[in-house]
Picture 1 (cartoon, rainbow, N blue to C red):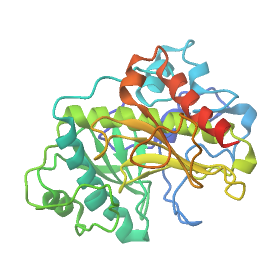
Picture 2 (picture 1 turned 135 degrees about the vertical axis):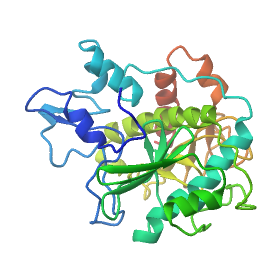
Picture 3 (picture 1 turned 180 degrees about the vertical axis):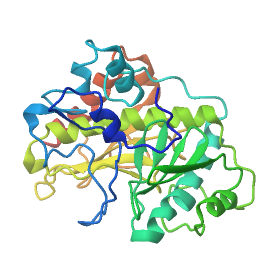
Length: 322
């Protein structure tokens, strides 16, 4: 199994498993660092430079990793560990989840996002295997978490630490602690020298939730019509969730589709849809803290097929929006 704390190239790892002559796409960012466009980052599922007929992709209606998992044990393990197929089931939230999640959230917006922000003015994050982190930036640098381990990768080298304070993590990365990436639902930063509650169980749980949410939302991006103009999926450090806007804004159909790990309104994670133009009185729009709809984590845990249930929730929203 790949050491997720070592220097990694997610797409190259995948490329070594596909048949000769095929291309591989995954859910995680890969080098080289993005230097073009508005986001200065790659789109892991982009097929612009690939032949769709000979590309193994995470999602969509052609050849996917999930379609290969019955043929090869190595591919099955690889896909399962990275939310590409052979889907694992989500587990109940670990003990002490709220407090630990909030400290991971503080680390995300005040330190990890700032490593990228100080270089190119962007602070969007991504799902990375076992946790979350930045896209590649600067000199092929990536900062990411795997469970409770902080990794600073530059090229083929990676340094690691288990952070004990916000200031200690910032010193390790040589960045300034900032709150520019925080949003209204971010926990207050507080004392940057306070001991952090970064339990490995919570870190692993967040990695699974972000992988699950990324896989589901990327499936939406891949299967909606072009006029829905799906935006690039990012894990926003302020909200601490993977999310993307999808739908025709001019027709009042655009909404944000996301996977929150929990916030002030909910201790547990939930999926959500937030229509930009408001909602009707249909009971599907059941959210109480914003105009939209939520699918509770308890409902996902009870579902026989969690990923299908999540996709059905999001697609119901798309249908109701017209």
